[in-house]
Amino acid sequence: MSDWPKYDLDYLNGRRQRRLRRTGWMRDLVRETTLTPADFIWPLFVIEGQNERTQIRTMPGVERMSIDLLVRAAKEAAAAGIPALALFPNTPDQLRNPDGSEAYNPDNLMCRALRAVKDAVPQIGLIADVALDEYSSDGQDGLVRDGEILNDETVHAMVRSALVQAEAGADIIAPSDMMDGRVAAIRQELDAAGYEHVAIMSYSAKFASAYYGPFREAVGSGQRLLGDKKTYQLDFANTDEALREVAQDIDEGADMVMVKPGLPYLDIVRRVRDSFNVPVFAYQVSGEYTMLKLAGAAGAIDGEAAMMESLWAFKRAGAKGVLTYFALEAARRLGG
Ligand code: PBG
Image (cartoon, rainbow, N blue to C red; front, top):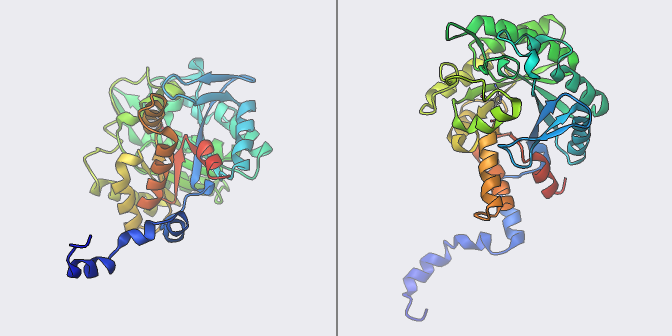
């Protein structure tokens, strides 16, 4: 220390960045972003039955639940300060067909789940995913003819699906299919049917990703899917194209937009945040969840610490909130 040249110390004393990191209270004082239970949307998987829960092989700690248990989970979420749930049905095999017509059955599993939760826990927001893969027999998000995914016919089916969901109590319609023009069509038909108060959160920048694998097991679409979703979901090499999708969805009437997957796509979240002024959400998808869970369970990382760090990263990147399977766990850790 004594042989440290005087001029270097002068330099350093004026530039000691570590002063702001010295103590816990100082770090609290200067922290640039916050993370609270209100930042989370909790995705939940619904099955038929009473008091039924089934473990999802590919998602340790996540279960599909029958509607009665779903209601219980919704109460826990509300008590923990989580503002909204995103529901996904695992449609029974015998109800799946090439048209995915169960998607617009007003009494389908999804609609019954929406009604039950809305009735029992009216203070929590309900987000309804709209896409055909949860209902069709071939695991694609769109209708298939001769190996082609049909755009406009799919949009028509999705509009019908969104209408029965709105009627069942969905507060936010979330089209996750990446067909062209679906936001405008859904907005127009919701308004025409008197659901102008129902919002649209569009999966605007949804990339064709290997990270969705565990989810497809959860909703039962994975083993049906032949090929991939690359003719509609975005190419993961692109970012300008993602911005064009976001711009078009906002133009078509999306109230909120989403980037998906999450952590590997934070550059997209940041670009969307800097380029538009609608709320942007990120989806920490099933594969991201499972990687953290398995690495934590193997003792390779501190799973809980990595969970919190990953959620904070979304806020730092500019996300308004995060769809995450960690929602309840993280909300409770944050004191919700
Ligand atoms: C369905 C849909 C998918 C996800 C949400 N909605 C799967 C897919 O597009 O294949 C993925 C969610 C996750 O992986 O957690 N359209």
